Image (tube, rainbow, N blue to C red):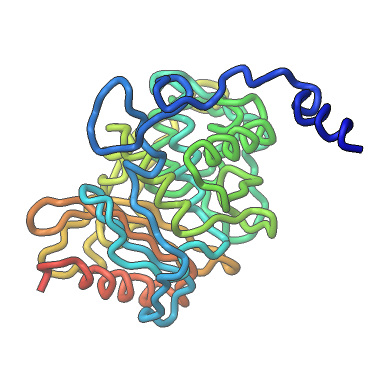
Length: 315
């Protein structure tokens, strides 16, 4: 018996050694995590983002399922309420759709709508795309982010990946790369499906990445947009859009000291009223805020304003 044990120990379970053994003196086998920048240092994954501890959940905002407020510059989570709970995102899904369009597409490219753009769900927001309609990706993104067109999200998905199914696979892959590990997408628009979910924190990660694109920031800050695209016969079709964000249309005022830059709205029966925003405080410091499943629109904007009060120095 002793001979067998010694043999196994020497043989290393059939391996003669490690290809890259740990050695603190070797830069390729070990990294030192520190605040100093050098070619010998690797930054931890969370070094550039806010971290929300699940144990720190607050519950001060009634009438909403989840809420989070994140200081972009300081990488500090100002407020956290159930931010890791899996919920339906409604049209906040379209932030990921836009992110992938900007990452893999070209704004000047022409998109031709297929028959799949027909959305039959009652009450679904659409711009009225028909099979054969042609518009640029730039025009499509305005319709996606400002007006929340569900039909245009299908056109974008097919333009990027060839099919909605392939695009959803890409959505989930990119979500994982961003650390959005509690997210699963089955469509590019956010119409309700029990297997389509995310969290307030994951949406912060996705929105934070989308903000790196100047075009995204430009579109979400626009209150109105007018353009013309063509039908299958080349006839012009005018598109007049008003942003669904009630802060931008001045229907809902923000607190003193808070400037709303823009964001994305979302509403379905299952998801409730949802909103994610980029805002600045009176010093110009940026914040991302998100609320999921508010009881109604008044509650949504009221609780968002209440959450802004958590920003130091606002009052």
